[in-house]
Image (cartoon, rainbow, N blue to C red):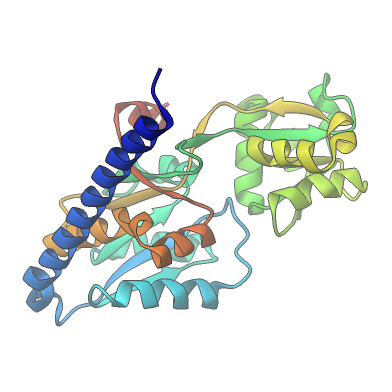
Length: 286
């Protein structure tokens, strides 16, 4: 059995190595900036952001905070979008940046546009989550959903597409009949059902767990239909990215290593990033 001293010593080694890794990566980032500064002088590379899964209340604040962070590394900027069509227009036309979008949206676009995924977001160490349809009513008969209201923090387009994935393509007519109530946060969707402002709520599984902690009585009244695992947000780039885009990817990957970077990640509901691996590619191609 290890002593308290040996456990602290082990933790010291682990954190020491982790700290050295972060320091090394930041040093590489600074070195790359000096190499690419001349090439970047006459251009401004951009992170283009659109995520219909989240309800962003203040796009101006989101942009200004990301712009301040990115400006420390060079002529980079952040451009959020509230409109899907406008975002996709930039996706098709622009080759001077990277694209931050929901995995649901990426799967819809990957065969239409010359882009490829690089990173996936992480929350609490996981790169996936499940969506849950919650209600006080019985959902044994899917037809009972027809004409009902669904509270969701995502856009109407996203919400209906997620429900089609959960209920099946053959029930498109039922999904089309639903009234979507857009709310600021996932927890608000569940509260809307609790206060009978909506018949159903679409939320993440983790938000449902939060409800259990803060209001176990309301949680106990709900029946749930759970989706399959889906990936969190994706960072994608044009195929055959240039060196400046590769450098911007390095900056994005290292955001969690700096307090300001972590704060900005929280604004888009993430803790960090991981490189897309074989398991994530399989989920994207299902």
